[in-house]
Image 1: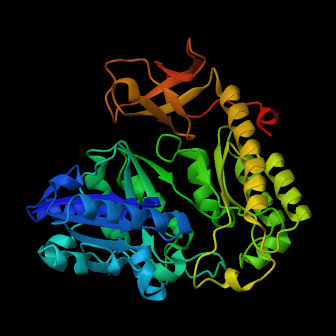
Image 2: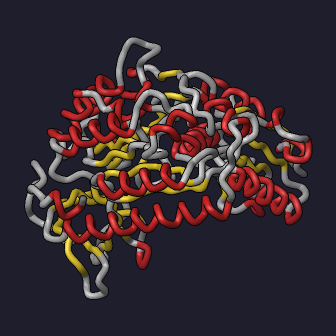
Length: 432
């Protein structure tokens, strides 16, 4: 059987697609690069925004129009919410769709794709991207009023540490970096008597060949063990944290149902982390135009973003999701205003990113090459994408280099003979 895979959405979804890829490889099926070559297409869906679900429907319809003989399966978050959508918006009603599989139910997919359950349970060995993903948990026990993903994914479920160590060892043979991902990774271990810090300590100790990167994690869930690893193990845990903020206004945070932190406790957690790391890539998610957000709330978020040492921001205008509590809060912000506020926040993010990159010139970086030819770049430990002017560099190559401007003015990395045991001290004021 020839199978085409298409993923929408977050890193957790991309990991699930890699698990499907591994299952198909082990089951003797062929993965093809275009839908025109496929007998079956598996679309891994996202429910974060209205646009993500609309894009799924557009892609599936186009594939069906061009290849009416295709058999399609829709999995992922939007699939899990299918029964809650009007019939006209349900994935199961799309042309060529034979099966809808909620979330990442690999056993249901194995049944649909004629793969044995034993094969489906093996996990990934090598992934299609240069940097590998390792999903350590699924689901979320919080109740953010804007989020459909928690509804689609269910309660927090941690994978066993032993199975994660085994999978990471296999991945480290082929990948220089492993990204720890999930729906709410900071809750890892709550259900099995462990913590994310304990897991990461084991990974560093037992899988020394790879460097590890945390994906999105709540700022207030950065416990002492995680901070120690981020600060003291630069060859094993990269100095990069993406800590969702969503708003710098406590009033809006309360309406969002994000009651486990305030702007002040978020800032305190980031300050404590930044005080330990001389180099820190720091990102955040922000939602502009959430229901009830006033001009004063937006201004508070702008000032907050300007004050903290962010090196980039991901900004989204609020997108109402069916079935979430936010749709019942009232006091909507007009889309035009939400877009304008989002643009203002993105401008702050761009300014912070440029200032941070400029401040890193002359410093050392732990770089991993991604892409080839004209697309050849490197990802640094602190999450800068930089040019690599080395025709011999291959995807996955890892080296210590010095950051500089190339002749085009772009940030680039040049190989160095130095060893990265610690990052040099930066002028912190330059990136605030």
